[in-house]
Image (spheres, rainbow, N blue to C red):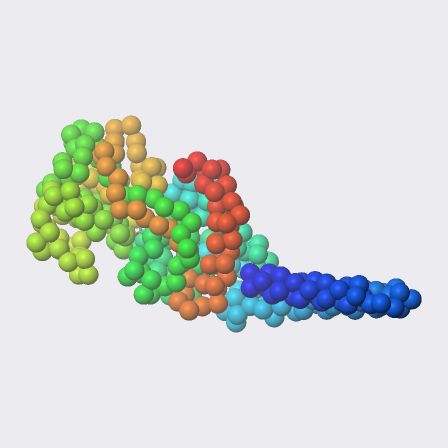
Length: 313
Ligand code: GLU
């Protein structure tokens, strides 16, 4: 929305010129000359307003960074989204239609650019690679902003904050974090879940932090007080939970919702705030566009409206 900014600046300049010129005519002592001066000022001001409008049109035409212009020229915005997270990114299996807050945000970005939108279903394990390969232009897929990820990709200001929790079979008798001591927990590869749960267990004093190092933590090798089994996608973890292959299924609450069947329950606690942002290629012009759009939609109530619409609060 740099273009809007340009437009506002240009409009202000034109407005200020009008005020200055109006001030000059007002101070004139030659009453006979005044109407002429006013008319001249009006003409000049009108010309300036027209010039400002032309500059705005040029700014819109020329204002995009090269990578953003490439999307505009292509006519399609490629967006990585989730396909099984109700309220965020969900694909109706019968119609193929996508719905959710992240789908609407993607559509709105495409509308701003004046292009179509195409969705690619991604997982926690594939979304970064697909962005790096250029298959998708951005990720809107419950992607938590972390310092480590920010080293690789740009993230916008968060548009939503979720929490991590744990889903279990009621028959397991597990009801709290404490009960997860010595459990085997199913998590998705490439997700923040294992680290979040381990840190929550350490903070609560249920497991030791002796060998914990946030920098080098690896779910595959962690065995201090609980262990993890990593899977490529969430349906597979759900099946593993039913089969007793794992004792618990840990991830963001929004993602777990669809797997919370009658025989299952969440543990009492939720922890580790997960701030979702749009991820884009580091240093790209498109990162700036996404950031300006998201901050605008946070400020004008659009995002709150979507949170309300999809009952995410
Ligand atoms: N939001 C968490 C993450 O980004 C959970 C994984 C997921 O989004 O699938 O790691």
